[in-house]
Amino acid sequence: MQIIWQPKIALIFFLLIFFIIYFFYLSGEKKYKKDTFQTMAYFSGKTPSQNIKLQNIYWGFFEDFKKLYMFLAKIQKENSNDYIFLFILGSIIFLLALSL
Image (cartoon, rainbow, N blue to C red; front, top):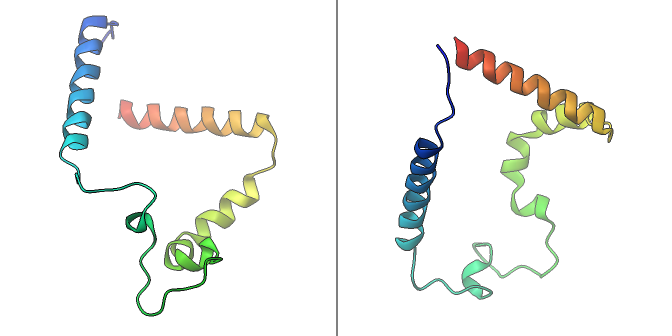
């Protein structure tokens, strides 16, 4: 099967995606006010002090993904070659999965 680049189909696809996203945007909450109490994290009980660490607010989220964080911290060497290798490896795995 030969895949041919069809710019008209791609343009229609991206416009369709844009309008779907825009529809969801328009159907959002109209009363939302940025930089007010509505954007603050919810705490039951007493109002906490202002200097709460992020790890305390999202403790359950961090606990659930602790194994993933530890794995990513081990492979992270701050070397761009490693990132490029992992990107290419992930792309190959993704393309192989698509071809099945």
